[in-house]
Length: 424
Image (cartoon, rainbow, N blue to C red; front, side, top):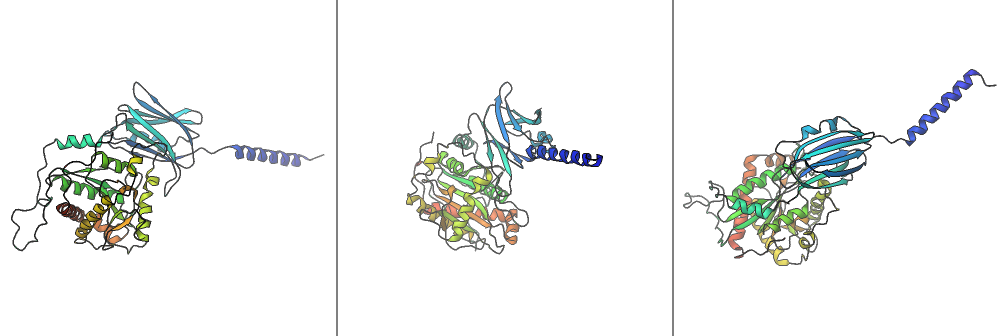
């Protein structure tokens, strides 16, 4: 017969086996690692980053307007407890957000809305430095029309032009540089400025911690101010805040406002910190003009993966945006514009390449709008990173780009009327 000690050993072994089997069948609760909110006029994005894939469901509730999101198998942690503090009063669409345990194993998020929205809820797999993400995009029930916004702004009293904002002095000072000729303009020129990256997509990050998305927005805002102060010119930003806009939507905005030019502003990066200088790129029909241009285009085109795009939505403008890129006249105009802008950039910075390069940048694929991508400088170069963060240098960069635009139009006046009908 077994002794008392053998019985105790058998019982302990059986208990260990039982615990092991239970543990093997159990699934650890998912943890929400971070919550980020990106409010903007176009839409507000809420991103939940978590450590493993989760199951979720959502529904809209009326009177008052709310979006309810249920997360299965999610731990209710301190990140979720801090949700209310993530919302600012100026958010166009969210009044309040809160979370709590709805039932065992389910956490419920309730987003109180300021009005009717059309939400898009989708999951993103890990990419770059991000883990799993659940994205809630809250679009207004009536989409923001960039053309109407531009027309409303055009009805406002014109800004008084200040010295240095694109005006040419009537009498140049003795010994000063002769001002470039102004364009002969028969109508208002519309220029779309596209600050690269934004929101979930920071773009390149300098060694000093600078984000490309902040530099590009700052330069684009300065350039916008200068363009708007120039007679017969107006400008539109594809984004005017820290939020993400998919690449094809940037092109779509340019077409909706019947843009004459499209300029995408970036700050380059490379694996070697010694790389430096400004560059200008245009679209290529026949492959990249260099291996570096191809590498850069692939990197910039991956912005949608990092920023997060709902691939389940069929964009009605996408087919029209990417159709028939064989219109060489538009690319030739882009090359002319790029050459004029590059020449002016060379007056304030070293040029990475002395000629305009070409590659398959998705953001340049409007077949009827001359488009260029400007790499202002290498943010991965510590010296150039410091200059890119200097307000005075940003202003000089914006002024140089404006001079390039004016030089282009002096030789290539715009058509007497708009080339596009409104896209409805």
